[in-house]
Image 1 (cartoon, rainbow, N blue to C red):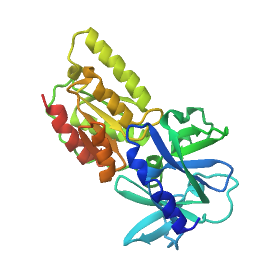
Image 2 (image 1 turned 30 degrees about the horizontal axis):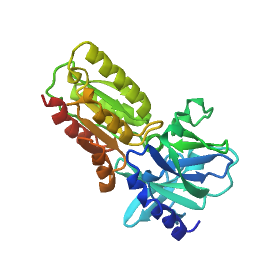
Image 3 (image 1 turned 90 degrees about the vertical axis):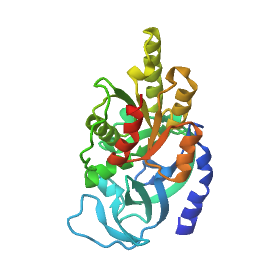
Image 4 (image 1 turned 60 degrees about the horizontal axis):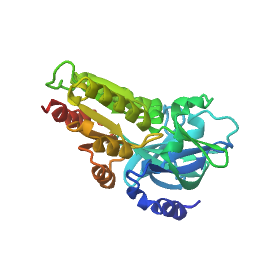
Length: 313
């Protein structure tokens, strides 16, 4: 696939901004030279093109082949096959590079070949517990294809954390709240959950979490029912709900619509936390009723967004 074809491939899914609340996602499929098919959320891919000239740099992390200049910015380029230590991979770096971004970091992923984009229901995107692989930590979800095959969805956050280390969280002043103030958050990334919990700990609030949208909605309904039966105020149990946008089994947009349509959660703000930081994605969040939108992962921005909402009486 050449650069023009690759750009057309991504251009063809501009309508994905209309997927908000539809519980559908679009996955860019690719191979690493083995029989296994991998995928990455289209939203996390800025562009796809031929592998450029890479400047070799000493003392780089495992799998990082070197650096390239991309429109004036120097970014690292990582060979996914080498990083994941896959067996039976053809010799060479791979002829295609995908450019992904997360937490203000941009990274080139070298792959063997990009295939196509598929649209699937989030209900078909499952957690990877059943996958027997040494790379489970790098796989955030699995899609069971209609032809019986499996597609492993890569966790960009985990790859970046493994290759370059996790983002350090600076000192965050505590919020002015009661000691029993609690926040509920949901994110399918282990790295993101760990960082969110660290921010909430520094704010001085308790927290509960879920690992996907469906699990979150089930738990939230249980909490709401318990609060209603005990004649308590829901904000005494949950001061705020923080949702990821892209999650297996139920995305953050559908989850937010469910919360906002349930009167038991009246007065509980919903904040969307997503690696998709474009204005289009902010508009998607607004369309389903989120009270605030914050891009991953900026600890100070997250804390500054949450603090006034949890302090509000």
